[in-house]
Image (tube, rainbow, N blue to C red; front, side):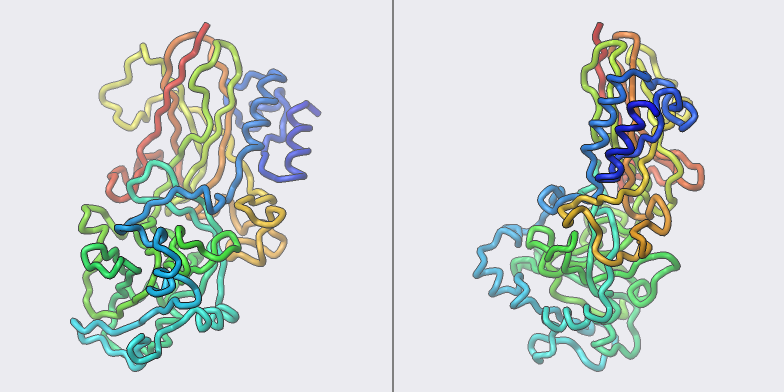
Length: 418
């Protein structure tokens, strides 16, 4: 057993965040890059790099895309209590759209005293609560905001409390916006997606926990929408009102900003750690993550290209580049994210009773990947990464248009010195 294999086994037994199960001699057989150095130094460097990866993002480490002036999570505590941004005073209205002929028998209304409060939501949660893993990512962001374990009550159970009867084609919803109509951020879904889940898909939820902790105000608490398979603009924060409407058109604020609001998450790869400067012949670890979108994921690849060699002018997506396969990490047993002992609470929908995923990688989540580079010739290089989805299509295809999700091929610069 090689040294890296021993390191791998030890790390896997403790955290399961580390994947390399072969020594240098077996690297090629396991699909590692031909640039693998096979040296003890390289093995140790890669082991150290992979050991730092944490699957779930800690709440404080999420990238935050806020809105509002001031952002609602920055309001003083007393103001939050006044406007329903704490669990004790939060209420949710579910109303019929007065501008359409939607018919509901029992509106959940603050004025009528029938709005849903947090205690009532928890009562629903005792019977209907679900947990699932989902990456939160912005349509135009270059890097995911974070990977989370989200918990809440399927929206359909609250919609049915309002007893809709007819003429409901769409669900509009929005959160607190400083009581300023110009600051309102709203989104919408077809009623069919709310009431029914496609095979293997998770429900749209009223979310109140992230990584088994109450949702903080900064993350959109006390309650936000979480829409699986969608970009973050659908998962509206500080949720306070739902409108059932017969209007067939979407009313999404993000659409007004020239975005595609019905786009599913795309499959794409990003770097986490890479060497900005390295000596020729010196091994350097590279790690990254891949976002697993609607088309799934079969492999992650990378290519290294010398700056002094021109790229083909007729190959915008670099299909002719010298792409090599990186190694995708398996599912962890230690999930990170601040969970006690790194263990998942029972039992997220994508996870078996034994703690292992139904399938890997999990759709609408992430997977980590890694490789080891050794560059022999000094010079300036561009290092790129991409995914191949489960249909065999290379990033950024099949949907290269940025307004429906950013899946551009990432490029970083590496200087190789003598």
